[in-house]
Image (tube, rainbow, N blue to C red; front, side, top):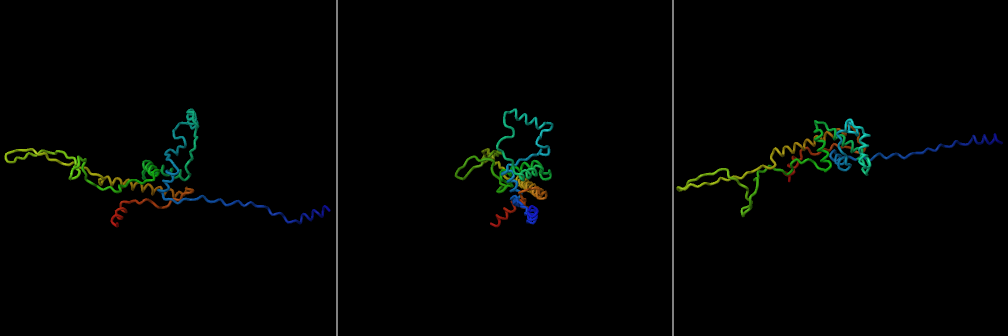
Length: 237
């Protein structure tokens, strides 16, 4: 009986192993941003910061132990590294690092600070929009029925003789100044173009490295000569 039961059990179909199928992990959502929008997101939204000493590690002071730094902070009676601060996104830190390593040919640290400042405020450099070279008086004295009167000064005294009488007449002149001179406008436009060139370098560097996880940098760049576009718009209008 035992042998018969054993033979019957040996003829049973083998049990199919149960496999657990894990759900596919959804890929992270990617944002497609221009380089200017990516900078504003990194510095404005994520509050990333520039770290010019990141190559030296967390301890930027040479010859100082990190343990000594922690002990000095603890001596203040406060909680070390505490609070409700959330670190920026990983891509935001990478973008900030690329800005901090801007080469001298693209403006270096000075341009990096300028880029971060403008990105936090969501602005672009002033290229002199609306500025026109004008010659105006240095000041105004009063206003009468003929309109505002400019400040004048005596430049010389003229002596005139008429019918045997000699009289002195002051010769007045109006000191003037020039606002938005051509040199001023040219300087503002040069600074704007330097900013555009730095953003072009950053966009190319970030795209070529391919190290951003959730941000895709497009080839869209700021208009390098907005004054030309504005002039064409005025003529067309």
